[in-house]
Amino acid sequence: MAASNATGAIGRVSRRIGRYVNHDDVLVRFVSLWVVVASVFTAAWILSYLFLPQGLLRGGNPGAATGYAGSITQEFLWLFGWNVSVSLIAVGANTLRSVNTPMGYIIEVVQAPWYGAVWGTGSLVIGTGERISPSLAVLVERSGPMEITAIVAIVVATRGVMLWHQQSGLRWREEFERVQSPTDWSLTRREWTLLAGGYLLLAIACYREAVAIAQVAG
Figure (cartoon, rainbow, N blue to C red):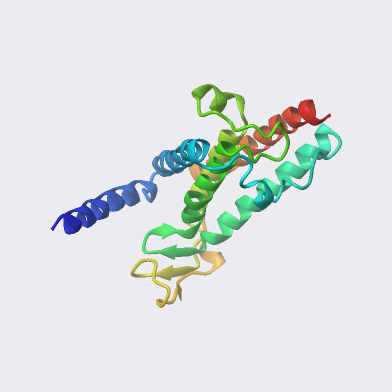
């Protein structure tokens, strides 16, 4: 009985979250998904800071082996190019939708705790290798939260770029059916605005990070 009640409660919460992250209003979608992503990021950040070995994820960080690019401009271009590539993967994932939820949303929710754990274990690309202590001040000082916010905006704005749909939720054996073509895609003015704002914020975050890296490594 207890297990049944717990399952029912989880189902109700999931449906409520789904209702907001898939809302018709793009700003409601943005705020809702941002809250979900920020929550799992913060939880992973705190837990990894407390319980995981320092530097654990440095070997699995694709950027960790690149080092400093040599100048702020080159570092910015590398960071911005990398993050744009990540955003395009998430946008591409939006072409797959399970019930009402685009797969790009899933990518962001899965990626956020990994990034939080990178902070918590001190596995950033350049720096002292010290863990980043969880605090509100760090969220303001670092460019990471801006990057996360930007990617969330981009993914939410492109929710409508669906090609394949799965009717009954994530099941490995159920195929996705082709339901649209790229000619059916359209974004509202507010979605275009959020998309442009997302890439602008991403550029600002990457430049800010490039400057910070140059101060440490240059």
